[in-house]
Length: 496
Image 1: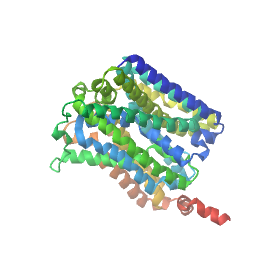
Image 2: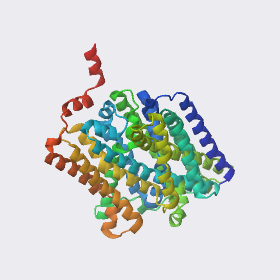
Image 3: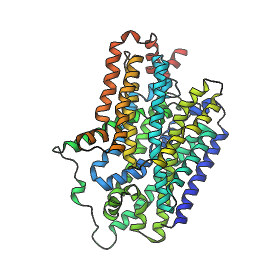
């Protein structure tokens, strides 16, 4: 790829991101603007912004890389990431918005009346945010190295710097505009090249090459390892979506619970359209770029296909377009994650002498340093696999907290803490062992995808300990449950 095209693409995306963020700065004035955009974001804007931040490096590059390397079984990743919003819609979207909280720890304290639960939840928000941020920064380094030949740390530092500027300057108001723009940029960046690639695949004057037939065959019932991995991925992606802090915080920006539900429905459509495209790149990559598997560079298949299949100026321009989309993916997801982590840390700092906006800005600057350091020092693993660890942690901790907190009066602070710590330890230790020790056999399989056993641990601990400590149920639980489940229009009818 012509490095000048790649540099130009990255520069244009960076300048557009900073420019749109500067526009958001003009309307960001209050603490509410910085944390939840004053709860005034419409469903159309919010759904585009959610699509922008949710479709990360794992979606833009990682899905195609997994499909390239492993075939049809990897389609469970995009299916799970999309279908997770159905559960979010059905169980928590509207009640969460009606809670009036800023963050998941806010909701935990509101529902259970416990500072201790809030502190445990805050630690988990930071852990999930860092675990999710690291692969975004590593993916940025991979992209920079692939398209320009520059050292990987350049892309990592560049994305981190742009994210900090946008988040610190305008908060949620700024990144809402930025992420909405970046969703449509990412969709266009994948959609336009795919037409050229499919044309080249089918119109070269010869029978179109195809991938090996066994590559399309899913795991069979006689392969217990494959079945376990599939179901564990589904558990992590289905249930982890509703527990991701950077996803949940966006629903606090809607005007009301009805708007939160509409937002979720639109998001389902936007994600469904998007996820058709990385699959095509993965299939074409198995035909034209299978050597990337042996080289351990499967995440680069999206960026390399135009040059391999088309070549010349057309291939270079399309590769630059894909580079722009990839960089938009890193920026939008990193912005949302930084926003959610900074919101939690900033609220803690604001309890001291700092004002709300000042605390938020200091938190945003500080919270991004750890994932940058990890991205620069840790061994790189496939980006989609790394993100799934974050989903498993969210599914094992915040999913039980939100589902039980919204729908079960019997949840107590002691039960919530037990589930958060127990589920968090199970899902948190697994990636550490996987990366550091690389265990084999069934133990290695269980550690590589822990959600299928760590999620039940989280739910079981919350329910059993809450039953054992029924006397600790909040005295105002009935009033809180009415607040969570009463539609806003009922309140309007009562006032009239």
